[in-house]
Length: 407
Image (tube, rainbow, N blue to C red; front, side, top):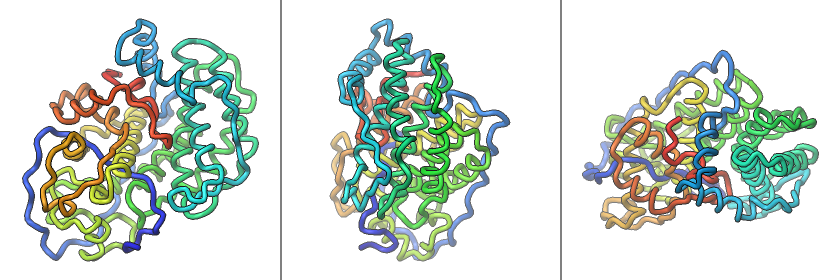
């Protein structure tokens, strides 16, 4: 077991911007300042925008127009979603009162069922908005009602992460249904209570000593839930954790000789930090805390990071300009290796475990299309894998929702 990392840590973050490969820096010096303070939280908006978790109404309108016009890649992405198990109108929900998830979801007692029903609810909510077919809205409501009437708790070591995965997805579905479906949702209040009492307590405090993907995914969930509940205090608390974690997860040379210590954690010496970064001792722009663990978990962390940035922008504070360099370097650094660049000996001992998943679409759209940044490697990777589907946890249909979306 590595320092401070329970054997069952799961989830990740990897693949952010820039086209050129950075030059290897010399190993960091042995000393560094103690953990940096958490950046001050952005105040929650005076009034939350709805729908406003990952997707705004303007974004959804753009998607609907593109799909209805048969334009690509949106039509192919929509068809992919409907053809998947998540888009089936015959899907039967499988709720549980207690979802028990151990390390790497072993045991898996309701874990996959919960995550997948949440993705299905979101898929049907998107299908409702795009088509206007009320069958999809009713199916989304059926899935959400089944769980809100059943679940009471998450248990075992992966409970916070499992709550983050499912808790990130449920509010995306609920926002669309509550704020766009005129047919009514009688048990909407019960669903909101489920988010507040079952999910929010598991995720709002973060997990500062765990691999960083945990905390980023948990904040993705906490911020989405806070928006849906119009909960300003929870929004501010989660945003404070996020703003401290992002600079401690993605390295820039401007951080100094070594990465920032993760805020609120017990990791406060160089030896502990190197262990936390999976024995990496050379730090370059765009490297992530879990790069040398694997790209799967890094990709999850990247996706969660971009989800929060997207939701924050919808709610009135655009975080992309402040994090532009950190995001673009991280995306480009990982995209290059995912595309097949040779791995130098100084990076993770010369061996990388690739498989970043569908993690780049939201960040690529924000930086390349809205901010006009050239991101050749990220563009090549993103476009070569369209339509981006789902990794069956909390990333779903982001080519459909965010490809070239100007809003």
